[in-house]
Amino acid sequence: MPDVETTCVQCKETFLFTEKEQEIFYQRNMMSPQRCAKCRSKKSADGDDSRKRYEIVCDNCGKHDQVPFQPKVGRTVLCRECHEASRSRARFA
Image (cartoon, rainbow, N blue to C red; front, side, top):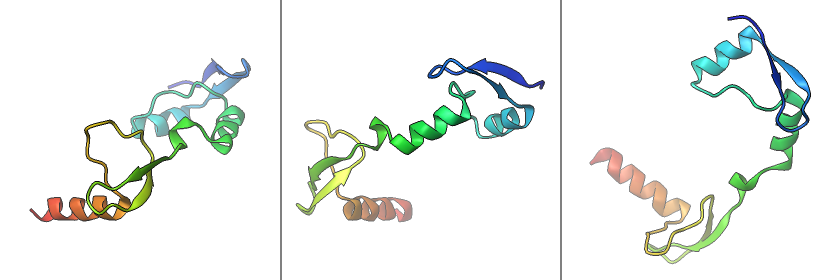
């Protein structure tokens, strides 16, 4: 695979997607980057909406907690401890 020149969707600068980087992205089953390294690091430092936390009350124990997804009405939502406990039970069942 030869090196590929790509245009960053954020700053519109051209950056090089090296052969070595392509191999790493392919091994990890990741899409090619759309942002240059500088914009990628800035985006991760700023944080994005995926890191937003939502306040919940656990349907199992009533504890207040935060989850990384927006709970849907009518769906059970668990605190971290109850979620981990249910995963442990499922693994050994």
